[in-house]
Amino acid sequence: MPSSDRLARLAGGMVLLAMANATADEIVLDGSSKLSGKVTAITEGGGVQIESPVASEPLSLKPGAVKRVVFAETNETPAPGGTRLTLQNGDHLPCELKSMDDSTLMVATSFAGDLKIPRAILSTMDLGIHEEKVLYDGVTGLEGWTNDKWKSQDNRFTCNGSGRMSRSFDLPDQFAIRFTLSWRGNPNFQATFADLPDSDSPTVSRYAFQFNNGGIELRRLGGQRPGASTTLIQLNNNRQPDSFPNSRMDVEIRVNRGRSELWLLVDGVLEGHRADPVKDPPAGGGLSFSTNAGGDTEQTVSNLRITSWDADSDRYRTEDRGDTTSDSLIFADGDRYSGKLESIRTPADGKTVLSFKSPVLEQPMTIPARNVSTVFFKAPKNTEPAPPPSPFLLRLQGGGSLQVDSCSFSGNRIEARHARLGALSLKRSSVASIEQAGFTPDPKESQE
Image (cartoon, rainbow, N blue to C red; front, side, top):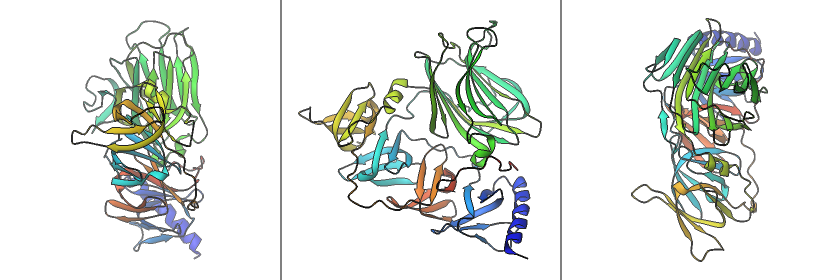
């Protein structure tokens, strides 16, 4: 029997096995085939080794055959980190600052412990990412919710088929809603927020996040006339259900009612920013989750958090970096200086401070990290040849990504090699997926 036929038959058997084995890793092959098993190694050449209950010996898949590996979902919630680093190659690392000198930045991460990062490969450092006040974290389950057909277990809310749950919160003018949405089957999901749940007004004013086979949409509902609806942000391209690894996405919606503005982030990436065209923004604190699907479809909301949010600090993080021949520092209140970030230190009290020298000041400034929004690092002179592109992109649970050259697996660790950071030892539970660089999911891939 030709090897291609054997692989096709094996793929079919493993797909059936995967339907009954939710803890298995998923391997997406070139084309529409999917395998299920436990990934044990990814070689520098791109080959993948897996262990499977349907095979008596480990399987070796040839380089180029595997497009993406989606790791089995765990109940572990990753620590987001108060700082987000962007490297010169586009990698994103959530972390906590420890120290920095002329050559090296030391950070602590939840996925790989302490890391030494050469200053020369740093591009941007965003601070104060998750210092908001937590208003709700889902730990009380369905307590306080008006509920129809949703169930709760281990801080996860699940609905089979159609159902609705709602609750009212005391929300400030600036707030953020974050949650992980996962599904099995054909999802049809809506979250509405910022409304007055008990209002009798025919022009109920609210926002709505919608996700179904058409993609993702953020809408403004009501506020002017009965039944009014305006699309604020619409994502169709590669945002259908079959384009998300492991049938899940991380959603973050930021609202600034003072400026009537909304931000939408999907899997940690800013997908859109839009002003509300209606003069008066929704004034309520209502939140609801609704599903409208067949009984064989399961939809789950987990990691639900509602927080206050500093809209002004985030606005400064989106500014143009300006002069690339020196470092630039933006304060949380918007003041900006050019010069050099000389050092970072974290004393025993845990309150990190930055030392920044500007040519317009006689002495370096000592600045508490909590007062800093963003640091742009001086662009390198590129005197050394750039390393060749890495063949794999490793995506972290809860946001963040790393380009790596190879991976090996041992128990609950993933050993990876990064072109500029060297050898990395990562917690397997902190990695969402590994995919070939430039991989684009095929929207025709079967959900099964």
